[in-house]
Image 1 (tube, rainbow, N blue to C red):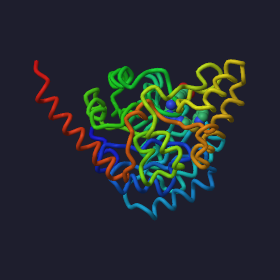
Image 2 (image 1 turned 90 degrees about the horizontal axis):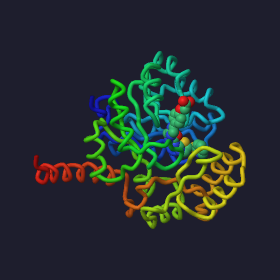
Image 3 (image 1 turned 135 degrees about the vertical axis):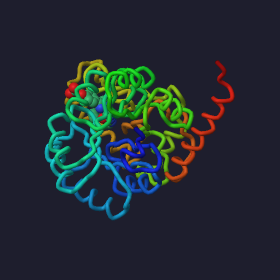
Image 4 (image 1 turned 180 degrees about the vertical axis):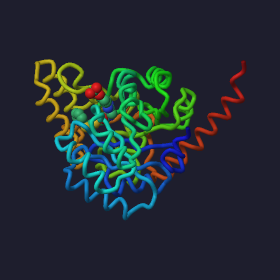
Length: 312
Ligand code: TUI
C-alpha cells in the first residue's frame, strides 16, 4: 500500500511531530508542499492546539496530521478535542495510544502510532492502527533502543499493516533505503529543522547546520526518558545530574523546559536542541518545498545508480 494513497498526499513523506515546532504555519507549509504536515502537541495547551487546528485548516486545503505526544499532561483532553475539531489523521508518540483508538476509528480518523519495538507494533495493530511509524534510535527527541535498519524489517515481518520508517532519514539515498527495507514512506524531522518555514530560532538552525556526525548524544538513558539532542552545556549538565541520581520527573522537566529555551530563545548553551544523528547531513537552508522535491529527485537518482551498479 502506497502512503500517498493512504493519506492523500503527493510525496510519501510525513513531517515528524516535533514538540514546540509543529505550528499551523509550519504544518501547513509542509502540506502545501506535498508532504504530510503535522501539528505537534508537545509544549502547547489543549486550548491553543484547538486554535492551531482551526488555523491550519485556513492555511491549507491539503491533508494534515496531528501528533499527540502521550506524555502530555492534557493527553486525554487533546484526544477528544481532535475528534471535535474534525482532524482526519493522527499520529502518536511517547506512549501507548490503545485506549483512544476505538473513539478515533469511530470518528473515521486514520491512526498511525509511532513505535520503537516489535512488541508495541503488534499491540498497535491489534488495537486497530491503520499503519505504523517505526522510529529508530537515530531520531532526534524521545527514542527507543533499536536502529531504523534493524527495526523496520522486523516490524514489517511482524505485522500486516503498512509501515513508515523514521529516524536517520534526511537524504534521497536514505529514502530509497527505507523503501528497500519495505517501508511505504518516511517520516522526517531533523531534515526540516533548517527549512525557511520552520519556526525555530536562527541559532538552533545554525547549530544543526554546523553539527557533524558525532555531535548528538542521548540524555535520560539511566534515570529519565531517552532523548537525543545536540551536545552542549545543557546536555553535559543533564548527564551529570543523571549520574548523580536525579529523579525522572526532575529530568523530564529539565528537558522540556530546556527545549523551549532552544526553540524560542535560541539558547544553544542551556537549551535542549533535539536533533537526529543525520544533523551532520543537513547543511542548507531552503524552503520546505525544495527539501521535499530534492528528497524525491535524489531518491530517483540513487535508484538509477543502484540499477546501474548492483549486479547479481
Ligand atoms: O515521541 C517521540 N519523540 C519525541 S516526544 C518529545 S517531547 C519529550 N521531551 C522530553 C521527554 C519526553 C518527551 C520529543 N521527542 N517519538 C516517538 C516515540 N515513541 N519514541 C518512543 C516512543 C514510544 C515509547 C514507548 C512509543 C510507545 C511506547 O510504548 C510504551 C508502552 O506503553 O508500551
